[in-house]
Length: 530
Image (cartoon, rainbow, N blue to C red; front, side, top):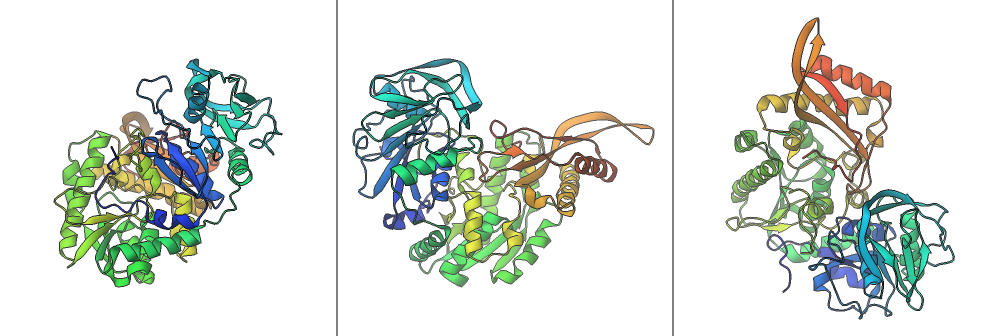
């Protein structure tokens, strides 16, 4: 049965319609959280990539230059594990299996895959590299890679030969003796694999022969053309947030349909300090039709007494939809709701392609609209990553000050307040966040950080202030470096700077007496705490 995509009439693949003019790499999705990250790495090489769920694969199109088999939350030993017939691609085009993909290749060619004695997760170093092999050319001895699997390959059968190992994994990489088929048990697509881009370049450019004819410029052109053709004379209401994603989505729609676009910026009562006024000022120069709607009371009422993260996200999503339903009635002839959804939002919520990805967290603007709402959804950026969004925005001439803004979650400070939401907690976190972000700007550190935020913890601790005992809130500060939001490392900010920020927060924000700094990487810890 063909998988049902989430939502109704969602333009998930506007540019797929035009992708036939580009060389393409097909990525067979077995459900890994990193599948779309593979697609992003391919696009960094200016090669168009297309993801399809494994159960939707029915053969190769003539313009496919190569295939990558993704990882998976499944074990190849599971009864319900994905088991596609690969006979139509093996020996026809180059094939690279990653993690589950490699284990599936081994298992179906006489190899043995069993549960590992211990989970093989985290950084590892390659050994015994066969740099004469086309896949590994140009890689360094002991190159760092990222492992993430619970099974391991015990034997690879007679058809394959080993091309690299690690200290714990004998068959870290292997290749077919007679065909252009490779398997690797590590993830070259993640940031932690330091030379993963070299390996993927070897496969995409060297082995598959892709020249690289896809770019943010032709993405923008093709998307604008597709939007214009799809929307026609209809009106679109766009949820504008002031962030990079919604801004670029708005500019694409504006260029496609002009004054048919009506932008609405909702104050959900969970924004950063003074953000509502600042955002409205920022958009005055862009020629966009923007209306500000103050609906903070509606959101806070819906969140009253709720402490479960998923319940809070869903409550915000429900009110968000209700606000836009009200707004749509004021725009005569509105037929579409525009959103700045990007792929990290999607991959952590549901599989963008109907595939088997595990849900990490819900996003308020992912998954379509309820039946009562008469708007269809258009999401021009749904299949690209944050760094790609910025590249597209630069191509469109959007101001660097807007493109350089840190990502800010749609549910706002609600998911940075652990536990229930109150006006007082929002006030405290707004003040803390303001000191944190402005402090980075003043110190010249803001542009060195990919995303930063403050988290109000459901923890009170004992302190001493002015010879008096206090029992007040603790806050956590988070700052990460990343390129895509799928993986991230904590930022090594100067201790003197962190000390000053901590001192400023404790002295200036009534109700806080302790500040901690989050030094977790993603994975395993998400960037947001909820």
